[in-house]
Image (cartoon, rainbow, N blue to C red; front, side):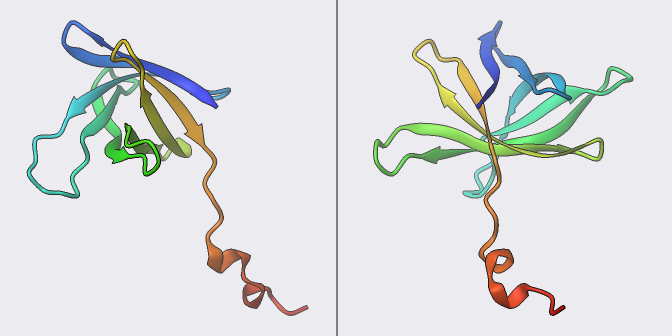
Length: 117
């Protein structure tokens, strides 16, 4: 489900992420790190006082079947539940932001985890 769009405006990657209960103006800030596990971008938004705060991060991934690059990560804050995101690059260089429902972990689906009545 598409919940946002990010585009390059005056050298900054900015856009919106919106759901039924959330409306954010966001900025992607490139992470300067040589560490292989570092995210490519931090996701920043402004709090009620107008200060920029980091609310998430995106890592660059490569699709196994097509070899295409995309961004994957999440946003989180005490005021809302963690939202998993995938950002797909468009032909014009912008990104469409999709929401992904988290998958249940195998341990929770295992019958041995059921409580005896």
